[in-house]
Amino acid sequence: MKPTHRLPIASLPIQTAEGFFLAHYSESGLMQLDFPSSKKPSPAWVELPGIRAKISRWHKLTTRSLKEVLSGKPISTPPPYDLSHATEFQRQIWSALEQIPIGETKTYGEMADEIGNPKAMRAVGRGCATNPIPILIPCHRLVAASGKIGGFSGGLKWKEALLRREGVLFI
Picture 1 (cartoon, rainbow, N blue to C red):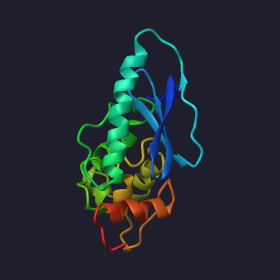
Picture 2: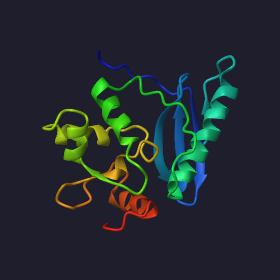
Picture 3: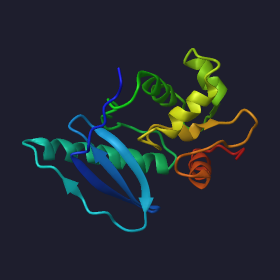
Picture 4: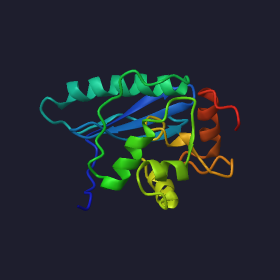
């Protein structure tokens, strides 16, 4: 089944020491998290009956989860994610990423083996590149087999910083 793209019904900023992240929500949960900008984005809402309170609860969970990861801590209670726009393969990768404990890494090849497709290292990398909720779905915990850091949608400085905060010292 081909995924369909849905527009967010709310886009809300999250202030951190690194700048303002922007969280985008559907009626089902957090659907995208944008890396920070230095300028505070304005909140945007599509008014639907009963949705504001639900999204406000999710935004509190998203804010706490983001701040926990940025502090090098595990997420205590993640917000609900809306990954309905993704393929089954992408969701499989992202689910496996969430199983990597804080402070640990895996290679793209190890992740391909883990999901039962040992030749899919590049596809795993592409799955990470299309992760709409980076940091909370920890694609930064995948590294290249060569010992190099690999890529990251937010840039290598972000990946290095996140891994260091989690206690990964080889970077």
